[in-house]
Amino acid sequence: MTDLSVGPAVSCDAVVTSNEPVSSGLIRLDLELDQSLTFQPGQFAMLNLDGAGSLVFSRPFSIFEGAGRRMSFLYRIVGRGTRAMGNLTAGAIMTFLGPLGRPFPPPETGLPVVLVAGGVGLPPLAAWLARRNDSPEHEIHAFFGARDGADVPWDLLGDRWSVSVDSLRDVPSGRRAWEGLVTDLAAAQGDFRDGRTRMILACGPTPLLKAAARLAEARGWTCWLSLEEHMGCGYGVCKGCVVPVLDPARGPQARRNATCCQEGPVFNAADLAWEHNEHPDLSRADGI
Ligand SMILES: Cc1cc2nc3c(=O)[nH]c(=O)nc-3n(C[C@H](O)[C@H](O)[C@H](O)COP(=O)(O)OP(=O)(O)OC[C@H]3O[C@@H](n4cnc5c(N)ncnc54)[C@H](O)[C@@H]3O)c2cc1C
Ligand code: FES
Image (tube, rainbow, N blue to C red; front, side, top):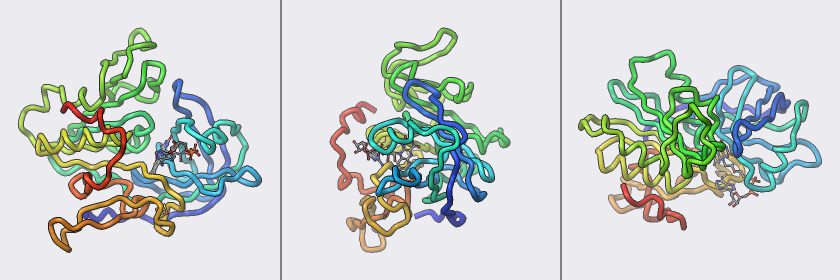
């Protein structure tokens, strides 16, 4: 696997400075940490509530933005932990462990890049794109998919992202969105049929990742995927996050379990043993 060495993680308290919706389904959480750190796009942090309300296991969230002691996240409420996070107000204390995991790689020289983000898959790719703002020599196309117009954080996206929605409902006037799967929007780009090799970076639900991998394979592009496995510890101890990967050192058919938190969450799609990594909801990945 490609070596993407990163710096050490810090464990510290963090004060919530803001925790406000940026769309109908996404909330932006801004934290002020006790310590300063640097991160690479694609890395995540394990967050928890402090004190009596703390969860047995911290929850993993990709870092969206950050510098020094400021770190920001985008999250969707899906269960007990995120519901409790949604109730936090400015001044609340959280615990932070990060940055963790392997980031997305930087662009390869001369290789155009295609970013494909779905829902809460936005933060690591938005962070990746933000780092490229100073290097306009890289050709980058960014695609973001949401449920409907209200689910899109329009102000955060600016004008760099092409948007797709499952339903055109609630798309504000003056904003453009395409109805359909975000991977189909990316695949339909006429410019991409010029035969040039590209690099695709994707983060989102598993069907989106599968579709991105298939698009890359069909076109002969390289493909990096950020996987969202359930995580207990975030640093390689509990083995609750393993994903099957190919193990070419042991033979062409050999497989082994990789910890998503340490060897990922970003994997080269070519390293994943997809057929052993079945998820129940792959139907939407068909059609590319
Ligand atoms: C590396 C990484 C980065 C992530 N980044 C983000 C992010 O930027 N924003 C964001 O909103 N979410 C992100 N997630 C997912 C987030 O960790 C889960 O949504 C969160 O842990 C759910 O906690 P909960 O207590 O609210 O839900 P629970 O009560 O634990 O579970 C509620 C539902 O969510 C499902 N769920 C729980 N954890 C995960 C998971 N890791 N992946 C997929 N489904 C899960 C459960 O199966 C269940 O159906 C990331 C996950 C990983 C592994
Ligand atoms: S989350 Fe514990 S080993 Fe990965």
